[in-house]
Length: 153
Ligand SMILES: [Zn+2]
Ligand SMILES: [Zn+2]
Image (cartoon, rainbow, N blue to C red; front, top):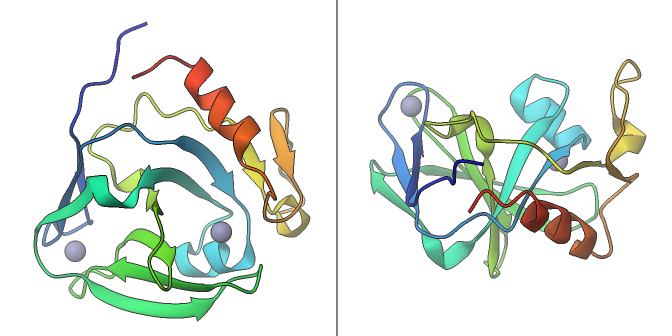
């Protein structure tokens, strides 16, 4: 399999925000929580869990929104003040891990989510055939292992 090269780059819809990721994602999964559905207007989000320290904006100044997640955690999201595109989410106060909205990557061709989380609020017409967590996984280890096994980095 062709390896994905670093850094990964991406940006918002209008291009005012650009970012880079200098380490491989920890895992990639689909999130079906109600926040992700509302924020995107879609059925779910393809989320790339990444080391917070390896992610940085290279162009533009993101706006920030905060809310309480379905799991009860305080979360923040960075988005473009011009086009509204969401780029990255994380915990408040910031932790070691952030979650990139993977559809904002320049190259999405290699993405293959290893599973689905918050399936209890998923749209009823979806079917799941990989790792499944009906809410927030207590342990992401199976998701991390499955992503490693893809051997893309
Ligand atoms: Zn924008
Ligand atoms: Zn979500």
